Length: 149
Image (tube, rainbow, N blue to C red; front, side):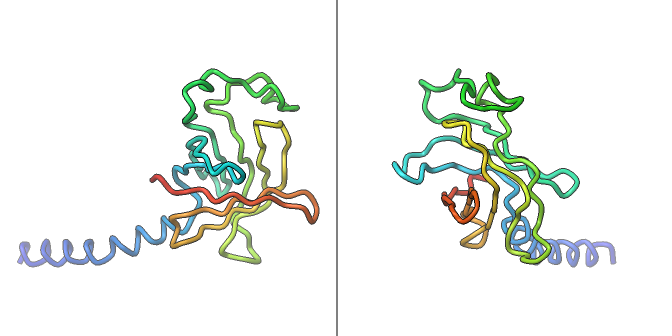
């Protein structure tokens, strides 16, 4: 009897694994490769994590070896002079109650120019890509980031 239960539970777990993976993939939580929207060059890896329903994204790796020790000289808040590695560039994003496919309400900082923009995150391609929109008023800029994990 125990062998039948163990076999049934294993089959159930195998059947539910793709559903769990899809649910995880449909969120911005994870590790993302950032792509410059103008040059199309791979720039960094950003890890987006969730705590208490709030998303934070930190630079985990800079892909250009010459930029490993840079600091955010152009930031104008408490991040000024802080190392780029570990820098929180996404802050306070939450799942949008009006549109379940996006996360909004936070901000994103471009450490290259120090400017902070309102933020919208939208998973695409079954969670394999992330549309990252920074905007001020009606003006916005999109980047598409690629899921690493």
